[in-house]
Length: 264
View: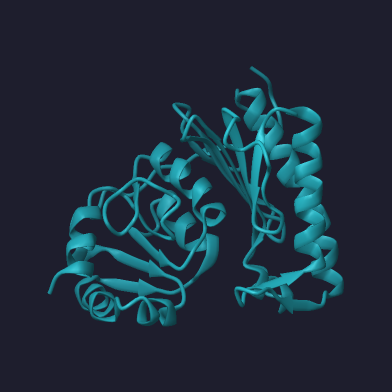
């Protein structure tokens, strides 16, 4: 075991992940403070030079430290030996590029380690606020070195419902279910991006719903919420981070949220 940014024991893999996210965040923050041009990718998502430079830094660090590990990243795709590798790092160099480019301090560096098909480590780092959320399998979930846990609220009627852009639910044909959740839940907040999930990790909200996402958006969220005592699934109730949608919850309201979303 080794020590890193925070005063508790952690594995060498998690120590590495925290360090590389911190260094990538420092690069992102330089661009954030000076401004950066945005271009649109073929899938109509924004990208900046900061995204590309941050992913390059992370990939080079992984290749140097773990040359046999595979990588899957938002900007550079999947490494050629991914199918043969036992371990795969899943990278989103800047999650929340739209916010980042507009000077809104709601963005993050996301990194996860998948081993034999299971997410083992996840890190979410917002350089603008210096916040780190992280977890590794069997070792609990943390924010900035302090243990975090999901809430104990059991009823949808008492819950805070968190979500991203409502237009995505409309495009996905989930508008009726989305409005049922709004009507049934006690409070609703569309804070977006990593902060939706962080509210659940820390027990400040009960469920976060997202659609139209990618594995690099979801992989760290899965392990962090699970280690915080909650639950992750896609909207069909499966544990995969590869289906493009998710509900992250305290576990107690999870099934009720899924039922309301799918059934009148």
